[in-house]
Length: 293
Image (tube, rainbow, N blue to C red; front, side):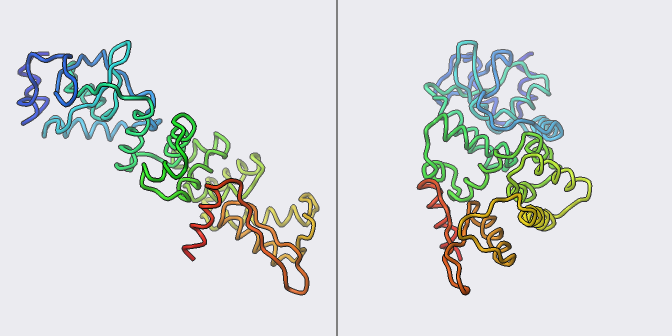
């Protein structure tokens, strides 16, 4: 493509910042032109799907208004990987650009690649909850961050992060339904009240077929558990109450705190409520919920 075409496609302002002789030599904050065939997507990109209409809209905006921000890259053995700006890159390809205005950053680690991609998408609200949960899990497992460090990095409470991560416990079929907006994250959290994956999938199909609300799902989960308890399929814990009102209260508390809750030593309407936690982060999450009451 010729320079004249670049001036039209890239719009006002940006072409003045691009040194004409600086193809693929830049580093730091210098804007250079990089062959589009040498660029690869961010391998740590948390977004699993890109809305084609959204990309087309961005391409039209770039065509009429110009590219306002260059793509951020890092070098790899085969060329370059996108750190930030994959939507812009896709839009430029749609416009037929074979040279991409880029800033090449040296010494960007995998850890930083994950974090930048995650924060960029969260700030733009481009991630669904499953994609966000997957990104959080990678930061925790691959980068060794604690829940507290992750909370500080992404600007969300530990309890919010923990609740999103719980969605990864659902079967893959249900996760896909969240991604495609067949059910909401509220529905999904209610489904977590069921421990049986087959039961979760069956109830998920009812959500779609019968257009159940989140409240409907919560009631269905409680009703299903109550029926199992009545049939004796759920073993009674030592000292647990047999009062159905207490069972309903336990289910409500377990949903609220996202963990096991038990009543013990219940006699003459006196007893003790125990909220279970499994690590320090879990305890901090529960304390945060209690402190808001």
